[in-house]
Amino acid sequence: MRNPPFRHRWAGAVFGLALAACTAHKPAPSPLPPAPPPADANAEARDYRQYTELVWSDEFDGTAVDPAKWGYDLGGSGWGNRELEFYTSSPENAFVGGGHLTIQARHQAQGGRAYTSARLLTKGKQSFRFGRLDVRARLPRGQGLWPAFWLLGDDIDQHSWPACGEIDVMELRGQEPGKMLSTLHFGTSGADHRYQGTSTALASGSFADDFHLFSVVRSRDQLRFFLDGRPYYTFTAADAAPYPFNNPFFVVLNVAVGGDFVGSPDATTAFPQQMQVDYVRYYQYK
Image (cartoon, rainbow, N blue to C red; front, side):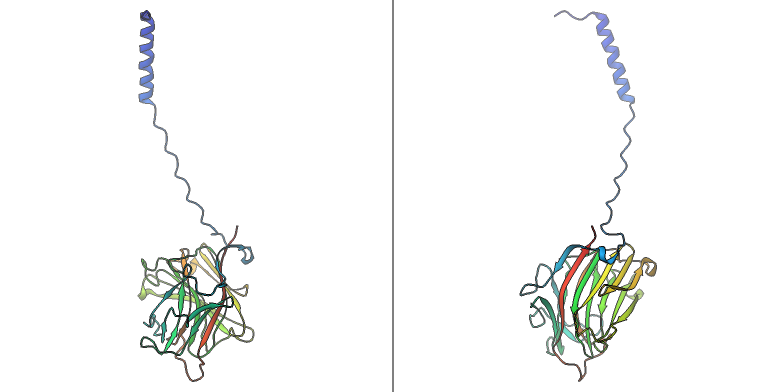
C-alpha cells in the first residue's frame, strides 16, 4: 500500500497534538457530594397505636427460657444497691410454662445470701433503639420485693454506668403494690449521677392482682411512658445533658430482694414470690 500524501500525515499529526493538548488541560471532574447518611428508622415520634410492625418478641410459649434471646446476670454482689438476693440461672428461679416467663424469688440461702432470684437480659443478643417496647406482666407484692422492667445502654462496657444511660420503665416497691415508678438515670460518671422520673398508680387494687401492660416509646430526643396504653410521662433531650437515650439499649427483667430502694423483707413477706411475664414485644411503624 502506498504511503499517504504528506499533507494527510501532517494534518493527522496536528490533530493528534491538539487532542493531546486538550486532554492535558481538561479539568478533573468535580467529586460527587457525599451520600446523605441513612435516615434513622422510626426516629419520628408517632402515636402509640401506629407502632404496629412487630420486629422482635418472646411470647414464652415454650418450655424453657430461650438462650438465643436471654442471658443471665449471676451472683450476690449487692448490685450497687446492697440487695440481699443471689441471682441464679436455676429453673427454680426462672422458668417458662403456661405461656409465661416466671421469675421467682425464694427464701433460700446461696452464695452467702439469704434469698435467690433471677435477672434476665438481652445483652449481646438483641438491642433496641427507636420504636415501642411492651412488657405485659403481673408483679409480686410484699415488703422488700423489687420487680423491674428496665433497659441499659448497649455500650455499658465502653461507657460505664450512668454514662451509658438507664431507662427504668417499671419498678415497684413491693410494700406499695399499687404504685410503680419510671426513672431515667444519666450523667458523665458515678460522681455525676443524675436521675429524673415519676410515679403512677392504679385507681384501685394492686399490680399483683392481674396482668398490666408497661410500655416505652423511644423516638429521637424523646421517651414516652405508658401504662395499659395510657400515657403518663414524657422525657426529652432538654431534660438531660449529655443525653444517651438515642443509642441502642438492651432489656433487663428481674426481681430483687431487699436493698436501699425497698428495705429488707420482714415477717409479713411471704415466699416464694413471682413476677409473671406474658410477653416482651418490640414494635416499629412502617
